[in-house]
Amino acid sequence: SRHTRIAQARLTSASKRIDGSSTKAEGGPEASERHSKANEANRKARRGRMRASTVPAAVASPTTRRRNESTGTTATVPQHVAVIMDGNRRWASSRGLPSAAGHRAGAQALRHAVESCAKNGVAALTVFAFSSENWRRDPNEVKALLSMMAATLRKEAPRLRQEGVRLHVVGSSHRLPVRLREALQEAQSETRENDRLLLTVALDYGGRQEITAAARAAAEMVQRGDILPSDIDEALLDALVCARAAPEGAQYPPLDLLVRTSGEQRISNFMLWHMAYTELYFTNVLWPDFGPKEMDAALQYFRERKRRFGGG
Image (cartoon, rainbow, N blue to C red):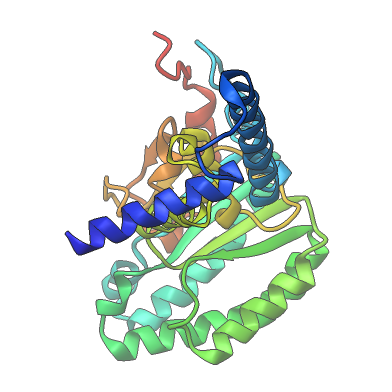
């Protein structure tokens, strides 16, 4: 097809740019061999520089990303916890309250979760605040929820700064209200020097979209001639996904534990790439009722797991 021919032509052009010359060489077989070796050395050097410039040091090393992935390891504290905060509306409905009341109670539960994780030595906490599918909800509820998020961020940012928590946001921002985008930017700026706990909030986020963006970035690198198609491997995609997930200069440990509240037992398009060896903890407790005791129970569940990572 026309699109296939265009793509092939672009890849051929990219390969030639990496080689630095055409495939023809003068001077006989010996000169041709020297020319080929020089081109290969140039390709390797350029690909190495490209990886180094594309991937933050904190997530570049597969060894760092898999520090606990050995046979039969146990860990006392998960370094990275993710939470699907489910049940706000059911909590409100069971009390005859509007959905907004459930979301306000959920914000209080998030404060407790942050405090518990920081106290227990968790390095990173990622929470699913608003999925890309949540736009399908009642527009009035969505508007009220996003407005509450902006107000809560402005109120909580000083507390996060004082407690050593760094805020980071992942997902798409272009559909979010201006007031919320401004509050997110201010809170991230205000807490960027903190390193006690990395709190990542997923807003207008989808796991498939995250993987798609990384794959597109790799394809664009090939198209520009920065890498070859054969350079695209698990380590590169992992680095590209995590480069988008982690703020500049922050460590981004592998996801150890996923918590989902309210009795649902699915992952709902959340952090799909990151969950290859994540321990899954499901509880019937609705998110607004998920306090320090419930977080302690989740962490205890993790402590009792023997993590084999496919090693038997």
